[in-house]
Image (cartoon, rainbow, N blue to C red; front, top):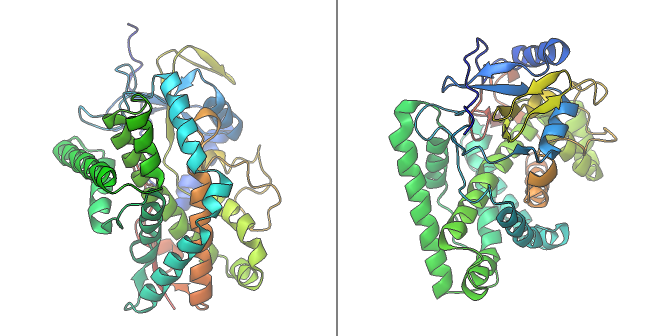
Length: 402
């Protein structure tokens, strides 16, 4: 077995995300002078950071860069023996294709659109609850994290998730310090047991939701999905939707509130909303980097990525690349070609739930625009704190008033 690529370097990653201007300048300098730098991770291992759009798209679309980073040769993204999130099945390409094919049927734009009425009702209900709170309010906790939790419950056909419980699990799983290893293990086990309980309940009370279809594949089609596979699928759907969509909702409103003229345009003309969502997805200032593992040596521009090296696709840098898009640092909801962004990835691992995420964002923004004509940040935009995590990088809180 080849040796892992773990030579220590002097460039620590992740970068400090609290000063968005400084972060943007750092990425800009790297795109210009050192677009594929070697960086040191919290574990002490090194990886190659992808900062330009063309390189990012190439890596995400190239099967020589595997999303299976649970291999022993891969760089550890965080401290501790559980340095990477792992899926024991992801290295099996046949399994991955079959799994994606099954889930894709439930996430077609047509299938997802049938949920608009129910998700919109949830969003309006949450907006009314928000209106009754004492101001200022953290938009992330009071609204943005609530909508995806209820939305995924509607999709899966399970009881509404207890938000604090799920948030606690996700926060624990996202920590990077070795001292948090026991907490991460406890959170992972709790989510596993929670998912087993959901499966047992669905078997006892079957219906016509996504979990029912997943269970039917496992029970009726000669074990295509094992019990472990079912659990991992449920956890992936709950965590991915709960964390990523929530932050896009909150950070999207942050961007709109910082551009009042465009917010006024959107209020007056809701036909601009689909384009605004795509621009929000492109413009979000902080994204968690997507890790990939090089299964062979790959030439990437002027850089040679060695076999067994780990690369990190910095979407927050790539989507602000002047070589890809004009005036990338300008937020423009009327931008004509915003949909080639990398918010949902690219290539073989493109996010299955992209249509559902867009639907929830549309419903969430609509409810906020309808209910709060005077919504505003309760602090100066510079006072909003940001963070980089293995899951759910973004604003820590978004205080709002009206």
